[in-house]
Amino acid sequence: MRLSIQREALLRPLQHVVGVVERRQTLPVLSNLLVQVDADGVAFTGTDLEVEMIARATAEQLDAGEVTIPARKLFDICRALPDGAKIKIETKGDRAVVSSGRSRFTLSTLPASEFPLIDNIELVERVSLPEATLKTLMERTGFAMAHQDVRYYLNGMLFDLRESALRCVATDGHRLAMAESRLDQMIQSPRQIIVPRKGVMELQGLFESGDEVVEIEFGRNHLRLRRDKVTFTSKLIDGRFPDYEAVIPIGADKEVRVPRDELRAALQRAAILSNEKYRGVKIEVEPNRMRIIAHNPEQEEAVEELEAQTGVAELAVGFNVGYLLDALGALDGEEVLLCLRDGQSSCLIRKPDTDDVRHVIMPLRL
Image 1 (tube, rainbow, N blue to C red):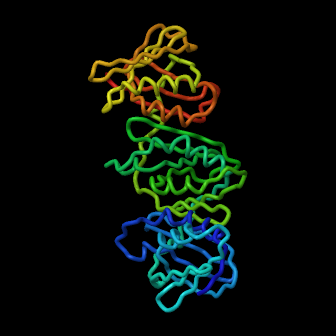
Image 2: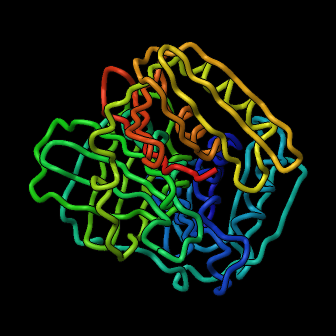
Image 3: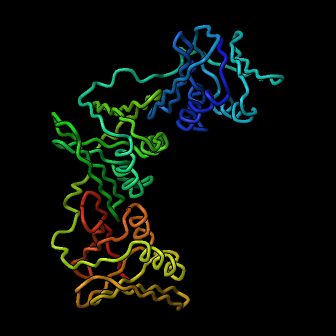
C-alpha cells in the first residue's frame, strides 16, 4: 500500500475519525485506524464497536492495499507537520512509514483482517433533510442527555419519526428538551430510536454551517448518516424511552414573557451566591415583574429584578439555575416565554411564537 497526499487533505478526514477511537481499548486493533487505498482515493475508518466513522480523501501515487495504523500517533504526526507539507504513507512488511520532507516515522501496524466493520444495517427508513436543520435539532436538545445514568435509555437522544416530522428529545429525569422539524416526505412507518451519547457527540462534531442535504438511514439496530465524504454509523440503545409527552405540563397557563439575554445575565449573577451543591434559585412573579433570589449556607443573598410581561398575581417556585441557563442558551430569539402552573409544578420554556422547541424543568424545593 502506498499513497501521497497533502497535509491539509489528510488532516480533515483524520480529525473526523480519530475522535471515535477510545484511548483505552480492550482490543489492540481498536486503537488503530483502518486505512484502505483504491483507485478512488483513500478511506480512513475508526470504531469503538458502538460508533463507526468512515472518511474519504483524494490522494496521489496510489498503490492499492489496506492496513491498520495507530490512530492517535498518525493524527499527531500529521498535525505536527508544517502547513502545505506533502505526506507519503507506505507499508513495509508489518510497518507503515510516514514521511514528509526530511521527517520520517515508522509505525507498527496490524492486519486489516482483524479490524471489525459494521456492514449491513437492515434498512427500515431513509430520511433526507438539510444539515443545518438536523444540527439545530440536536443543539437545542443535546444538553439534556443523561450521563452514565443507571437508566441506560436516558444516556442518549431519542429520534422520533412521525408522519412528516422528526423530533429530537433528551432528558435526564430532572429536565427535558424537545425540538421538532417538518420533513419534505411522509414517513412510512413511525418509529423511535435512541442514539447513544457518544454517537450524538460525534455526530454533532461532523456538522458544518451550510445548505448541504444529509441522508439518514434508520436500521433495526443502527443509525447511519452520510454527508459529503463521511459515513457515520452508530449502534442504537436497546431500550424504551419514557413517554416524554406526558412530562410536558398541561394547564401551565401562567405565562411570563421576558427578554432572553436579560434573564440569562440576571440568572448568571444570582448563581454566584447560590448553594454550590443544589444551585437553587427562587423565581417570584407578580404583575409586570420577575424577581430572582439566591441564598447559600453562608447566609449570603442575591436578588435580581426584571421587568416582565405577565399578569400573574403572585407565584414563587424554585429551580436549579444551571438547568435554566442551559435551556436559555439552547434557544434563540430576543424573548422567551416561561409557562407555569403553581409553586410545585414544572416550568415550560419556549419561544413566544412557536412551540417547535420546548424545554421542561422540574421544580426544586428550597
